[in-house]
Length: 388
Length: 127
Image 1: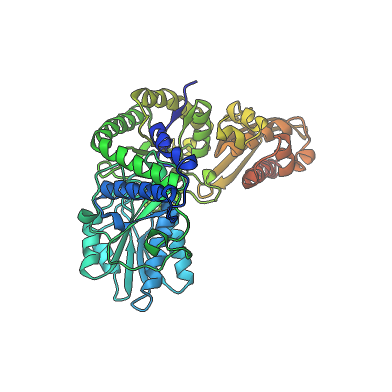
Image 2: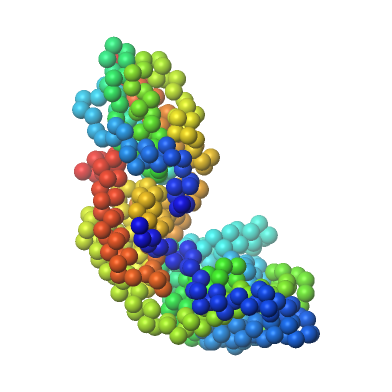
C-alpha cells in the first residue's frame, strides 16, 4: 500500500539533497568552529555560509540570524530574552489565544515571574483585529508576540499592519514564522518585526535546528549561557551538520518558493472542494483565502478525530486532528475553541497538510477513502441521531 | 508499522475496526447515556433483559479508538450475564479483555463501565 503523508505541518522528510550536503560535516569536516586549525575554520565557514542562506531567505543580514535547536528555542529565546532585558521598562506582554505552545507556555512561565500577559481573542477565522490589538496596549507593554501563520488552521495574520502599530509605540514585536518561512514569500523588513522564529524540519531540513532572526540593535538576555558562540547570544558548540542542512534547505526553498506555493494552493483547493463535495456537514476551519498554501483543516461533524486518524492510518494515510484524544489532554485544540467552535466540532477536526512530495494522486486517495470512513463512524455516532 | 497501530493492542484495533453490536436497538429495556461533547466521548448503550438475564446489548459511540473498542467489548461481555453479574463488570476487566489500554485512555474504559451501569439503572427503574 502506498503511504500518503499529509502531515507536513508536523514535520517534513529531510530532502535527500540536504542530507547529502550534511554528511561530510559528521565525519570529514568535524572540527569545532571555535578551533583555529583548518578543520575548525572549515566548519566555521560552513556555518557562516548557512547563515547567509537563511538570512537571504527572509531578507535579513547575516549577523541578525542566531541558530537555535529549533522553533521552540527561538520562541523561548525571543520572549524571555526581551522580557528579562526590559523588566525596568514594563511587565506587560501581548500575545494571542491561538499561538503554538512554545509561545503560550513561555508566556505562562513569564506570568509566574511577575509579567502580565494579554491573550488576544481571534475572530471565527482565527484572525487578529488591529483595533482589538491597539486597545490591549498599555504604557507597560514591552513585547508583542503574534504568529505569522497558524500551524493548525493555516490562517495568515496581518503581521505588517500589527508590527507597524507596535513599532510606532516603541514596543518589540516577535512573530513565530515556523509555518511560513520557506513556504510563502517573506521579508523581515517588509513585515517590520524585531524578531522572527523559524525551524529547519518544516522546510525539508533536519530536526534539531532552527533560528531566531534578531533585528540589529535589539538587546536580549541570552537563553543559554556558556561560550561566546552566535555572537554571545547562544552558547554551545554549533550543530554544524544541522546548521548546514538548514542552510541548504533554506536555499532550495527560496529557489522553488513561488512555484511550490502555487502548486500546493491548487492541490489544497482541490482537496477542500473534494471533501465538501463528497460529504455533508463538513466545515472548513481557518480563513478561506488568507491561508497557508498547504493547509486543509475541516471539522467533520458527528465524528471524533482520533477515530478518523486511526482509520486513515489503516489505509496508509498520515494526518492529524485537534481532538483531545490525539493530544493526551482532555481538551481539544485551543486554536479551534478560540475560533468559537463547539467542543464536538473541535474534537472532530481533521488537519491535512501538504508538502514538497504531495501529488494529485495523494489528494485523490484521501477523497476516495475518507467518505467511507466517515460514513462508517457516523453510523455508530449517537450525535447524528440527535441532530436528525 | 505505523504509529497508530502501535498505540493500541491488537484486540483494541480488532474491536475498533470491526465493532460488535453497533447500532440502534428496537424497544430496549434499558438505555444508558454517558459522556458529553466537552470531553469528546459520548456513549449510548442499549440492553434487552429477559428473566433477569441480559439477552442483547448494542451501542453507539462518538469517541476515539479506545472509546469505540471498550463500547464494543462491554456489549460482548455483558450478554448472558444476570443483572447482578453485569453490575460487577469493572472498567479494569474491560481494559484487560482488550489486552490493556494506554494509561491516558483508561478513562474511556470507565465510560464503558458507566454506560453499562446507566443502562442497567434505567432498566431497574422501569421494571
